[in-house]
Amino acid sequence: MEFVGEVGPISIKLMLYLLCAGLLLIVIVGLAMFRRRNRFKRRRETLLNSALDAEWQRILEKNFPLYGKMPDDVQCRLGGYVNAFVEEKSFEACGGLGALTDEMLVTVAGQACILLLNGKFGVFDSMQSVLLYPNAYDVNDSGTRSGLVRKKTRRLGESWSTGSVVLSWAHVLSGPVTSNDGRNLVIHEFAHQLDQCDGNADGAPALFSREERIKWAGVFRDAYQLHGKYMKAGKRLVIDEYGATNPAEFFAVATETFFEKPKKLSERYPKVYEKLQLFYGLDPLQWG
Image 1 (cartoon, rainbow, N blue to C red):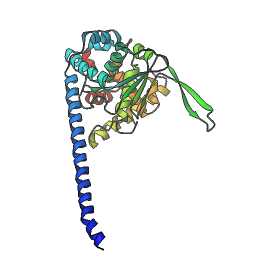
Image 2 (image 1 turned 90 degrees about the vertical axis):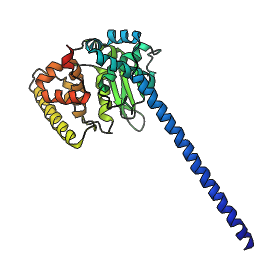
Image 3 (image 1 turned 30 degrees about the vertical axis):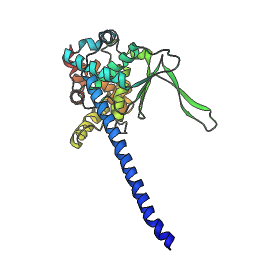
Image 4 (image 1 turned 90 degrees about the horizontal axis):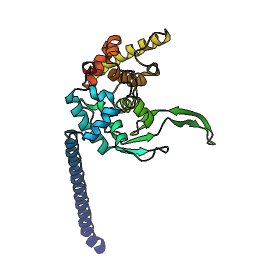
């Protein structure tokens, strides 16, 4: 009994020591994380307010004709986002693409970041990497337990909710060449990233109040159904037929159309144009 009585206070002191050490470690780690976040925020703010390098401007002028139509203030904001995107995101060359170049990084970033200029979406904060293939690539959609491939499809790009976007470099270049055909691979896939930020790819990004979400859902549901009717009737389409696949694809294709065929979209689907104008904080109709 005497032995137990002597050990008790020592054990309590040891427990208190370990508790204090643990709390101190938590405080130290917390402070380190806080400082790291602050450094990251300051660095991002610096990048967002920085001018785009002259050579990078020439890359966008050559590979992204829409850039040349933008007002100076929009170009300036886009430049800051391009700087932040290129620094923060990881790019990976796949399928024998070869060495990554500034042209590749800037051409992707310029088209993607046009979706961010209202300042509400960070810099695609849930996305970490861009995977670039030289051209369209094959994907095994599913397989049997024995490993036999059931179906192989050819893709130009895809957006993963796990934080990656996959793109064909050939189509990153070809998409913007005709800037009024409503087709832009990068804009399409990064619109999916915005849609997926709430965990659901449903054509309704959860970035609004409840009332706004209800209005958005009504406008896009009606337009999606009308688009399907036009397609079945064989009428000339404003939004590409791929938009009839599902509501998520309709949102992505409508976004492409918003930037590349704003006049036609505003005439055929004025409410969709209005919602996208508010969502992106831009009005491409005014860009000439």
